[in-house]
Image (cartoon, rainbow, N blue to C red):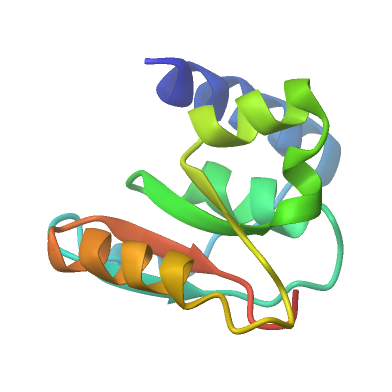
Length: 112
């Protein structure tokens, strides 16, 4: 419920601030596992892409973002999973692979 409410609020805020043009949303499968890979040029990219995804997704997020208790709680509520960058974090990758096999959408930012 929190996820849906926050997405709605962010769509209004981002719509006013940035006036985004969303292209290709119809190509996102609404069921089944999928991996969405997006560019990561600024800190706005993860919330912006997630806000306009037509279905919920789980995110890979660098573990440093979870060190702040409030930010960590918020990220977990939004479906983010901490990953250790530069260490070959196979545990998190396996967890997200299993979630994808079970029908979850996964969001990754390879440039991040």
